[in-house]
Image 1 (cartoon, rainbow, N blue to C red):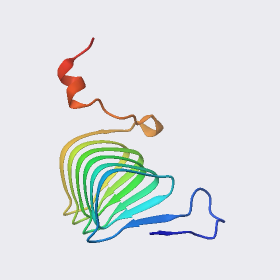
Image 2: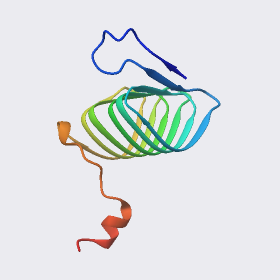
Image 3: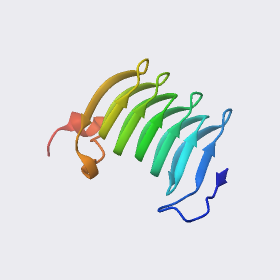
Length: 134
């Protein structure tokens, strides 16, 4: 489901939803904002703001300009600007972001790499690390 704004704002004004009770496996790519209240197993690429609601879950890789996490995320996150982990959220995995806000009560278990601004690039996969330089 997508809602479109008036078009007066800068950038894309559509908001896409994956509702509670919906499960998606695979890759999701959007130029606009995305809210996930269901479950996603795979890769999410959001060129605007990604919001994971309290009932939302993502397992896989996430690339977004900004992200607000209220649910559960397990995997790798690449956030160009700001990531907010809300009070009831859980993030387990690897994180690259320019700015990180962790609300009291949020769970973050993993590694973080910050301060890169627009230079946030995807991390090497586990197999790349194991094989070493060539």
